[in-house]
Length: 231
Image (cartoon, rainbow, N blue to C red):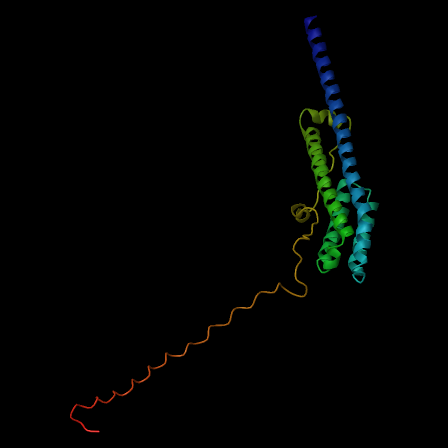
């Protein structure tokens, strides 16, 4: 009889552990969904800023049609991307590359860089990029913890029974992540038409002429006449 109770107790403990582990999987998966929603919010905010940014640049550099169209096309492709986080990240990498070209283009137009609307849009875009990176790190941290439980023993038993599969990270290319959000320095505008001018070197000192020879001393004056001399 005691053995039966022991077996029943073990079964109950296993069932309780299974329920707790299952509920934790559900909570973690919901947290991943919520953190992805934060990423999506920041991405939509960036999508809304880009058309105004392009129109502002077009007013000063309308002939740079290829660069402007590349930004619009990359933006539209990113908006239309509705696949996995990895597919979304690939579309975002293309968009970030196009934005880099746009900001590099602005370096050639000092009047554009002084435009208040352009400055405000650039600042808002930078703030959005900062929030996006924060949301990305939070999302990836939740995915990392969840995936560890999916692969670890004994929680992988529950994951296998109830089809809890690994989630994808939202990764960006190394070059983009290291460089951070696109930024432009508006404090020290570069010189237009070439490298910054440098002050000319001072001319070499003129050679000095040798010192003039001293003037010859005048001949000695004659002695005054003696007392015996006559006029």
